[in-house]
Amino acid sequence: MSSKIWFVTGTSAGLGRAAVLHLLEQGDKVIATLRKPEALSDVSTKYSADQLLVVKLDVTSTADIQAAFSKGIEHFGRIDVVYNNAGYSSLAEVEGTPDAVARGLFEVNFWASANISREAIRIFRDVNKPMGGRIIQASSMAGVQAMPAIGYYSASKYAIEGLIEALSKEVHPSWNIKMTLIEFGGFSTRAVDAESLVVVPEHPAYTAPDCATKFVRGFLGPDVKKTAGDASKAAREVRKIAYDDTVGLRVPLGLDAISIVASQVVAIQKDVEAAGKWSGDLKQD
Image 1 (spheres, helix red, strand yellow):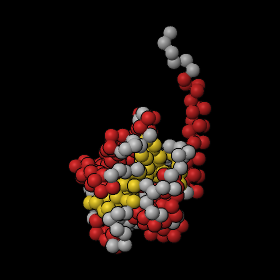
Image 2: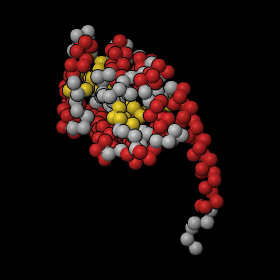
Image 3: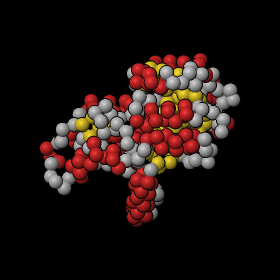
């Protein structure tokens, strides 16, 4: 496989950092973007500028996004894959989530990915010679089946899934642009650490032992990493997906993700079949 030039967001830790390390090890070229470039100083000393460009990027800033793409193009001449990986979550009941927390989550998980994807399409179509490229959007099994206690995170992933699906239908086939949503299961990252998980105190109405939100709050503790998947192996599969033109729009990644997505398909099919009795006679007379 010939090497590709990647633009990756959220590379300071977790799945993003794992992706950068694997891509570089496989000989790809990487534009690694993050808020604090010093977090990749150890990687920068190992790889030359011919293979790695580290760029400071606040994904919530459209000016930063445009500048980061411009630096990448100036450095490598083109960009083949844009991997929207940056994101975080909040642990809170929907009823108890402050607006500032919910809106902040959407700024990163939805709006940042949306703005980066729009700029990526322009680069793939108007700058790359020959035109073409691929957007890989990090989503989640919670973006297919919403989960209690992470309602706004689920909603942000549902939203970006809808936008990427729409984009995939809007781009003209001649532009040679492909999009893939990776619906991650659980992987051992810093996702449950303070840097990536905003924990809101439990709403007093949800303290009963049998509350679903209470179970999730207990599950998403430090011990969840012990049973989660390997981030480096996830990075390996993300690269394989980028090189495979037969991949569909959605890829649940992890056996837990496949199980959750499959159960949601069954649940939706059941609801659709049951809804027929209300839709048979709705035409105007």
